[in-house]
Image (tube, rainbow, N blue to C red; front, top):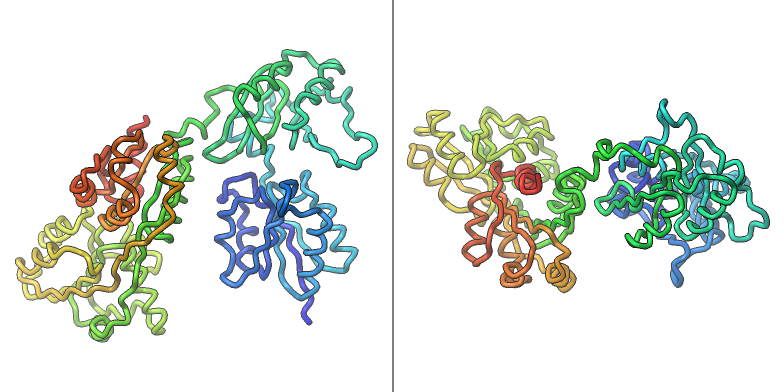
Length: 504
């Protein structure tokens, strides 16, 4: 049997995109992932389709794992020849039991690698504008555990030294012992007015920062209902310049934004929202169904090079078309001399992922504008044009091209079907005012959403509605739903920009 291997991988401080490149690569290659509660669940999207995923939360009552049980799992999975990723919140060896797990593996004769990560203290500070070191006020920083081992007879923390420490003190896992920590520092000589800060949910859209003097920080956290996971920073650095708090000043910070596309589309849109510091709420309303096995499509594919222009009207269409090429062991050479048009920048970008450059992209991303502008761009009289698009698309584009003298073949390569999702939880969130925005990227998503959620609930709540373009906005209005913003550029980036403008 092949010998297994264990990677102790730091998941980073919270945001999924703060994992290291090495960590992401290993998640893709793992046979088994043993995952901490503090590791962002979004990281599991890197896992291969056949990877075994085992969640090992601690201290949560029934269903929790002891460290010994986790140790046994590591030995068992590695001994069976598997490549194991032990995914640990933050950095694996900063108060993360990584050293103990590495020692266990070494003793068992199992090869391992430690993959470091951004630790919570650094991320929490920098995402809240607190500089742990600064040549004007802090040339030293110390990391302290706020929760020592339960069976430890004597503390290793030198409270007298910490109380006199002329730098920045950072406590991990300290919320449960914050009163005791404050008491010990003041008792040993630290000034009651020493600045202190507590950062909860660091790097996430739910990040919160409580600041007060050392003597008042515990009460401040109680008033603001600050809960773990949190990092405690004590020292002059905690009294940071508010101008440096870049993350929490982003226009979408803390905004709860519902995305209503298909599952893959929601994942891509959610990643963009996270980069804008918002909190995406994924609610699938549609499913994309390929039609590339139909006789019409396969016959068209065989004569693709006969066309003068091939037009893609969505990124979904591009993905489905190119997936089909791969399955048939074909590549972009099937286009021959044909020129390619894309309805907008996202569709062109999807083509570009496969090193296919669109010959034409309109300045306004609608089917009508694509037709009008392409007619002005090229002489289409007598030209053969292929439209590869949704079965549900309107005939407007094809009619415009035919009026210009083109011979148009309209071939559906996918259709959109309504996806039913459990919706009670979302209905409750909207009613409670816990949702800031509903976003719609197509008429199909509008139809799918309001087949499950009442329009009167949306209109009577504080939630705002954002549409990707005029066609989608019209479908919303036809259902009696108010539209608060319509994107100027009809892309998901344009949709986010429209939302951001309302919060500037």
